[in-house]
Every structure is written in C-alpha cells, then in structure tokens.
Image 1 (tube, rainbow over the protein chains, first blue to last red):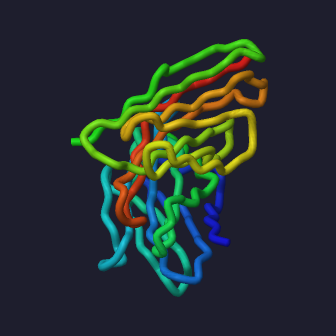
Image 2 (tube, chains in turn brown, blue; image 1 turned 180 degrees about the vertical axis):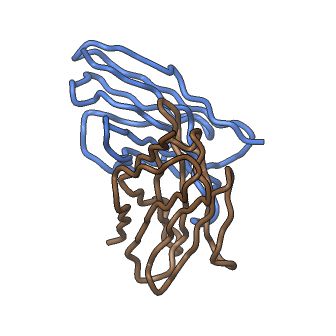
Length: 114
Length: 114
C-alpha cells in the first residue's frame, strides 16, 4: 500500500538558516506529490506540487522541493527561514493511476528560533 | 476563482447531541469533496469522500455520516456525538478530473465535545 513518511515530527531552525523538511514515499509508480502548510487553527494551504516535468519545483513563500525518483523522496527546502514560516507542514501523495484519495504524512512542526 | 466555505468555525457540543457541519464550494462544478478529521497533535484522517451527488465513500466506520445533497455541498453529520469525536474537521475539494490535481482546504471547524 502507498505510504508517506515524514522524518522528524518537530524541526527547529534559527531565523535565516536553511529549512529542510523530509518526505519519502513508497510507490511502485511515480506518484503526484504535494506539500501543504498549516498555520494554527487554519486549513491546509498548498505550497507546491509535482506532477510531471521538471523535478525541481518552486512554490509560494520561497519554498521549493525536488522529486528524486531513485530515492523516492520529495524534500522541502527554503534557503533562509523566516519567523513567519513557523507552522506544520504536510507531504501528500496521489498515485497517478486515477485514485480519488491522497495519502498524507503525519506532519512536521517547524519552529523558527530568533 | 474557486472558494470553499466551512461553518461553523467552532462548536461546543455535549456528548450524545447531534452534529451537522456544512461545506460549500463556489466557482467550480462537479468537484471531488472530502471530509478529514485532525485530532490534537496527529495527522489527517480521511473520513469520507464524494465524487458526485449522492455518492459517498466511507473510509472509517464510526458514528459519523456524510451526505452530498447538491453538487457543491457536503455535509458531515452524527446522530449522537461521542467524546472521541472531538477534533478539527476539514473539508476539501479538488477538480473532478485527474489525480494530479491538488486538494484545496477550508478553514476547518474546531469541535469540542463536553
């Protein structure tokens, strides 16, 4: 069965430091991949998505992610963390075979230290 | 542009009382619709999804039910709430064609059971 693993339920970085949030998936076929951000007491907001084409995907708020098929990974990065980046981040996978469902990771809470 | 509305934003209910949460989508037709629950400190649990009017798929057997009386309306209900029903309920939609489409989320309903 399809699964998504987000390593590190909590990640802390200093303001201005690199943000790296990890996401690995298990799939026998290349899936569609998404990153979402959730601020407290709000819904999930789409940061970026990979469907086909360029494997380095740029999203909103300066985030980007790279699809690496050989590593079955889709890690989220941002060169310089800002205090406003503190939130919970979810990786999600949709198989390319026409499913209606998405598999979400358990989330990573990012803390940005001043 | 498309928008999704969920209400109420917060709800406090006694154990054993009924529940009705409503979600509507504007600006699109025949969307796929989803209900998720997010328990404190945990990831997203898919409860129901719908690919058309009157078509409901249940992911988790429980005392909740869902209905889709109109194309862009999705309702989550319960006849008798349990303490374990507390959580943050999220409605989401996506375009009907293609699993490469991202899901878009509402702002959620915080449900507390006393």
